[in-house]
Image (cartoon, rainbow, N blue to C red; front, top):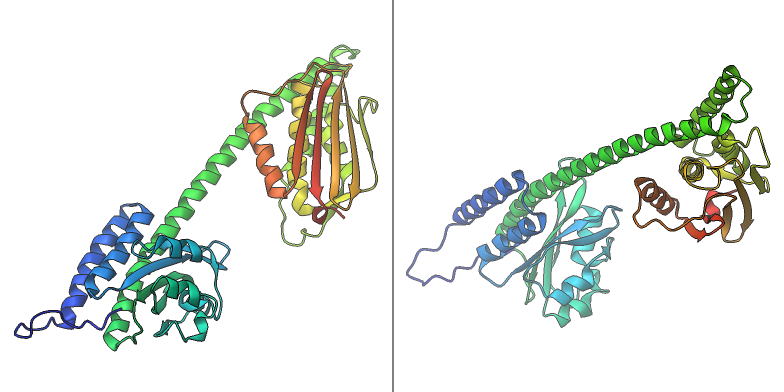
Length: 396
């Protein structure tokens, strides 16, 4: 970090190395207190950098880079004194041997001390960038979690070539340790927040599913009343369809358990299970399925089941299956682009694009994105038309 050469007059005693550690540790304790209280991550990391820079007094410029979630890149944590253009250029850099001081330190888990960027082979791909911003030396140490995994890097830059002293190395390691405590706490806090968000989403989805199930059951009763010969006949018809709805719900909560990731399910079987309660099993001309014997993988099955269940529920509540005369036609074809599924409603009320997105619509949009698929709506006077295109990797 610094050779700690004193700028004090010759007749004044030089500062003892222990004094530097005491001051650094005092300042770092303040930082850790802010971390414990849930302070802003960007501000805290920037302040850690400033502490390192202020304690040296020799023009050192520091940075903290964090490992990305994919574990293959470094993203900016804090570097308030480095040029903005330089920070922007290294944002998202890939880690690996030969990827500068930080990329190499993150990949190897070892400290990397480059005394001369102009000649060191580790900087071959970044040499021109660094020198153009007046950076001639870079010492980088990995920031590690308690289990030894790399969280990021702490780096010191200098505007002249220089080797680190033993004291420099000790202070770098001390600040890197504090940084690791702060970063790991922040990571755990972020994981906790995400878990809370996921929990809230599951509860909202559960509420949505329960409401849909009751609405669907009510619609089925209304549709079957005119054709029922007796109360017993009506009960039999409705009970059968409710059992079919339960089967459809089983598909919606499919999870890729161990040993099931290679299972394939045909589109026809999937649609028949989802649409059976709505009339497909009893009156096939009301809901038609037309397509080749196409299958989808287990990883896509639950997502597609949820999407079709949402479409079918909305068709029953508002669209082509709301009235006995309504129809839904589903066709599917495959091409080099993947699997294309067309859902077309007719004989129901005119459709218009909703002004606000319901939770169900947001859920479908999120699922489509997770599948890497696309979904287009065509709101027509005679009914709704939907086209879903699933990547070929999900179909076989």
